[in-house]
Image (cartoon, rainbow, N blue to C red; front, side, top):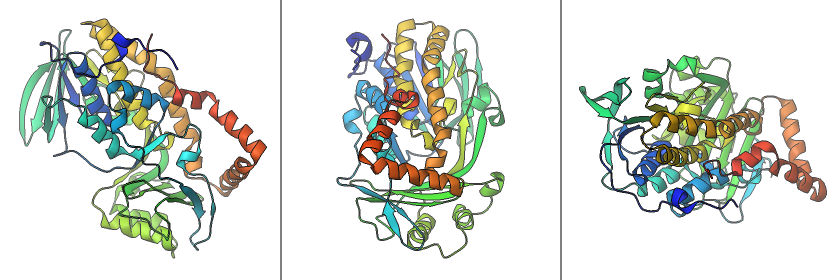
Length: 418
């Protein structure tokens, strides 16, 4: 455990705004809320704008690894984020015909993160946000112009626009960031597709004859379904499938695209019930798996963070942890550099670049664990599961994985600076 500099790293109570240092945070997700919490803790006056008419709830499964837990602890929210790993859980590989065998679940891989829904993390961070922090819903930036002393942002809400001045603009508005498009470049220059579609939502309860503490994986070449059990709420379902034509996947209803991708019928009980539940819900994620790759994350007084800057994809499992760490470290660097915004942002990026690059490598490497692209990869996964169950070889395999460079980065406190 690395010792903490108390003055620099412990901030359980927000500091009242000191006046004159005003930040616009675009996006009310994990990254945006955590950034606002951290900015307020160092005396800034953050204003949050969110394009949606209200806060989102639910969301797909996430894991909070060591990097995220350390940041959450300093932000004062770790105890507010539940670990929804069910007691005595078991995971199975299930076929369409209903056969099942013991398999490896999300928590069986190295590091054993805290597991919960994205909504759980957002709620935990939101609870730490001071009541007087201004949040404007249904509001988006439409023009951003800056000089050496500040940033003029034109905001639009319900067809009405107005321009305000800020000392800092933080784009925490996700994969298709409006801030990134307005200040840096069109999406096409920074989004790198992996060739997979993903869909995720919260199930109302167990499906496919599974118990409440049981997880299931249906694995077929180029497509998969994962059902992850949660304690205290319905399981999370996650579809992932390979496609050579991403654009065509956005035509028509998402559920119809899923049914087509998983043909031929019969779907079997688990897959069939998951598809029916997806059709019945109004809250879901359906998107392409993409990483954001940029040569720099800031320009002047505008900075991107979270998925807007570096989306690692759900396959890495590091999205929420990276968002929390990025917010934590941003406040630390701004505090250290005072009014020198540019040097603060450059120091922040220089510190984060190596671990984020590691998370992105992990995101690509782990695609085959979620969705084997071929029968050969499926056989490889089964061999991995077999070896993992052997007392001696399994222990050696776990030791090697636990101590791999990329896994060490997941657990390392990447937001700590001496």
